[in-house]
Length: 590
Image 1 (tube, helix red, strand yellow):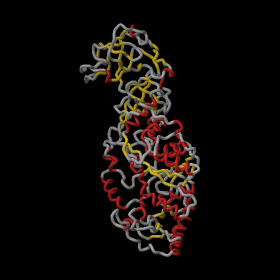
Image 2: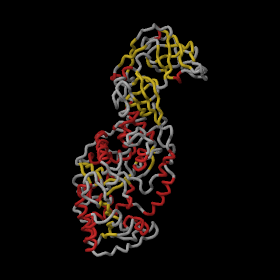
Image 3: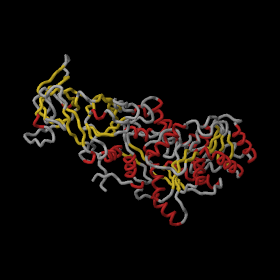
Image 4: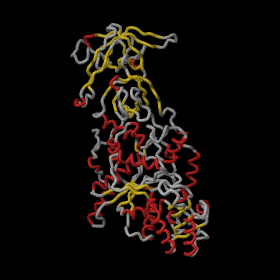
């Protein structure tokens, strides 16, 4: 049986993180559950983030805890206030309220002091090696790394150099601060990772106050500890970073000890979710912005017409586990259909119009017919629609020489007009090139819909729009943006953005970087679907002229549509097709 998973109170299904939290509360290890959603403001959030948002907020809510929204803004080159504002809007739109709002940059002074503490303890040193040299000397997954020639600098020299780095005496890349751990560690993330780099750039929150910035993997555990986060939830890409997370909290002597737990991220087939790739789509004009309805961003889904309820029901169904897997987008489409089928009014729209003249209908007469707004939800009531001598039908609802079992209009055939009368095709008008431009029909006044007529039956029912009062409209029809399900196999293997935020380039596993470079040679842009957007021009019922952005409708036979927020104007509506009416997809049985 098809179902819309209930997510009242944002409760989660049974999962391993819930079990951990329950045990922590029972044992007294944790008094109050504190989680956080920590995006880096270097792009717009996507559907994968929607799941991460839900996991953090829902689990905290379920146990009476709290969730903070924190921006991991440690990379001034890629971050922007635009992204900060979009993230806030997306979280609120999904229906979540954060307890506190924080920025990593608010803690820069504290982070600097903790880095100084590491230097004093002999646990960090200033290195003059270039990024390429550091990469070459880190070794591979099977070979140990080599110590930097600057690894044994004295505490005093390191303190002096680090202070001079802060004062701006060195150029970008001239020096870095590295943790001193173990260059032979089997975990490559513990081979003296970079924890500070020099970046002379204006920061969106701190301006020009700083020219050194902590690396994400160093800053993140400190932020969690400062905020008292009890359960630091992230995607499994961070699992290998957990030992460094724990090392950082312990060696910087943070008073609060946070714990990291990883869950499997959400990926959709035929969908790119790397922020770098999404930004490339925007920058190269392949889409018309981060909120393009073809984009998997939350703002794109919102503009297309998806609802928070459908998205939360979808992520609930995918569950919370360690597993990493791809989900068919048809599952997401299923939930928007389920959400809208009782909410969206059902109206008629003609996307490829062909004029029909009903020759025996009185000229100049307008008749107002009754039409239900949603047969599955009688509470939505009825509306009045005009009917006259001239109407528009879909061009593919007529064929001059139809195949067998074609039950729509053709010469000599009779069909029912939805909510109206039986009409019979009698004549076909063509232009000089032989194209059909108009068809002539007659109607039977005894067959009016709702009168109980049973004199005869017809096999076809078609939709239509009265011609004199029809409202011109634009319809935007979408196909997947990516042609092949293999697209994400060319994704950023190492630089691919985990759910929390993009990992800084210098912290990337050196062994994986050649894979990334090779993958970039085969550009994912080669997989873009040239038919991802089709624009049609037709007509809608006159009551649609006042449709407002984000109003949603089911157009007979065409699917669910949403009034576009960017291009639609009063009296000139533009509709985005959210999803077609039917799909072969079915949820597993409960």
